[in-house]
Image (cartoon, rainbow over all chains, first blue to last red; front, side, top):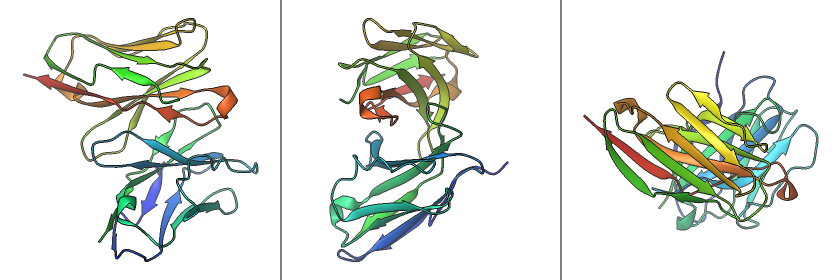
Length: 113
Length: 111
């Protein structure tokens, strides 16, 4: 079946602009995660959605970052007033339930000029 | 909170073995292992739950020492395809069901 789909694959924008990154998880997966990976670095947790529960936003680095998940499926990560330090690959993952293997999308490479 | 992985990098020749360690200062509920090849998404290898069980996946296996809050990934008779960065992700229940990943171990297998 289809894997986790992320769009766009690449995004170049000017400092100060807002960006929206989309994640389409595997059908039926109840858990959805967003991570950030800077060049040569590890995976930084951003936010986690599980079913209809309130999301765990503890990893969001500032109030410029927000995310929502509509209908328990597609998720959008929004970064407002982008800064150069926001440049990174943003990865989305989903799992059937919590504590299950996470399946990653190919990521969105975000470059802030 | 972030688990510590060691070594940071290792170079092997085909057929050699390697061990990658992942240690936490907090009591762990589970440890996940993933491999990421350059320019690709991380790929799941295995999950270990507290209880010290060892799991295997082809010639890659892992153990979880609950008392030491440590997991080790064992790669035996390494192949060129094993090259990549290995990440452990730790789940600490008090922090919820999110994974906190280590900084990664770069593994390069040479022919």
